[in-house]
Length: 118
Image (cartoon, rainbow, N blue to C red; front, side):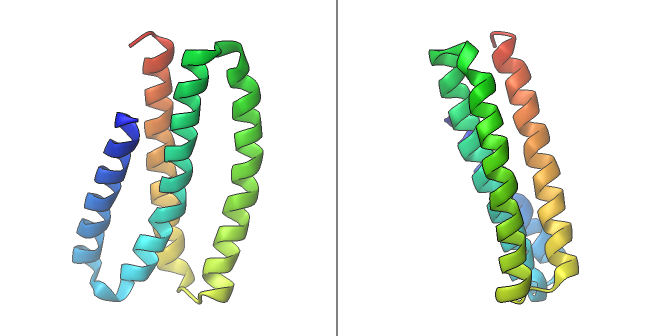
């Protein structure tokens, strides 16, 4: 749970820095590009950690189901943000991609530490 709080804090801080650097005109794209990868990574990490501590063999099935759910979630989310909400695609996609990569790299490093017994 502590790792998820750190992901939220780091994401909020980096979003504030990105908005300060690019101007408030991109605030919606930056924030909405951050929120879905952040939510998915936090939920995924909490579920991964709990499942591993409770029943390590069940982790593969949980991660497979989570992967399928995230594929659907991200596809619907991106389509809604661009088509319905009307965000500008380029800054939104840059934000979404940067947060997606950074947060899933963080999650991979956390899993490495968890599996090593840290």
